[in-house]
Length: 446
Image (cartoon, rainbow, N blue to C red; front, side, top):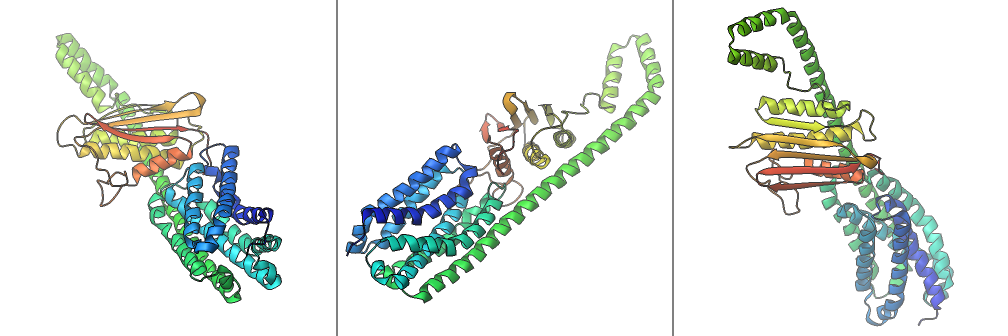
């Protein structure tokens, strides 16, 4: 029979849900859709909605034994708030949400056990002041160690690029533990009966500890996967820089050779001019310019990494007789990681060259337009001809033409753009595929 006051219930509810909700805020706030103030207000509203919903449904729980159903509905409501406030991979949000939610259930269970042992009469009267006191103790003993461990692990993987396929499935792990917790808590007629046994609390602590070890392994896997992607980007950047330096050395050798042979070329030109053969003169000049690559720019921009990537892929395009028109500008000092520049330009240029190579008929052409704009905005457009539209999977991701399954190049570009507060878009129209990127060259939280 209810003997608690509404004030006691509200205090208990704010402590129970607030500790988890605002712990989630501390982890996820860097990926907020809105300002920090607005995000904090949304999380505060989450807490109020949880307490209000609990107050309205508690009488029904005891009367109709709907505890599990109401708990699931509350879970869905809280996650909807989280998606509203936080902009990140949906699978990653589900992963964090279920991790914290199951820890919150353990806090409630352990707190109720302490209350039953210390104040048994008040424990069976509902949400008395003793429930609030013991929930604070449970937060200190349970949430603090589990929460801090989760906090450091999750913060290490927030904002990392290239791992979207991992999160698509990994959220099922904490979701399974959530269902296990739900079944354990509500399989009995009374949750108080379940909470009264120390063995049940210790059992749930052991389950949560084992679950955390699995979570930790998953997040370490994501971190290592991201390190491999970063290492590959660095290697790619080094590779194209080496190629650029070799090309520069060849140009220097050509220039020396041309200077040495200049008097011979002048003698030939004088002879042709004396004969008055303008066609032969034009042809000789054309061959000279081609042999010494006078039409090719030595540098596309001041930025070493960007210039190396563009030079590398423009030469690759030229070797396959693909016309490549590049107008690009980026200063040497820019607040974007060199590895991000290499991945961004490298993936788009590689995809463009690959698409042109696979063309069966028609003109093969690549056009690159990019540079800095006012306010630190960087804009890039890479157009390439294509005789068919790229295949798209069920989830909207492009199907790779290099291997079975979905490609990760376009996803990597999109993730980099988002980390710098921008967007990446792809479109196909009239035989031309376009990749466009807009982002700010001031670092966002990674």
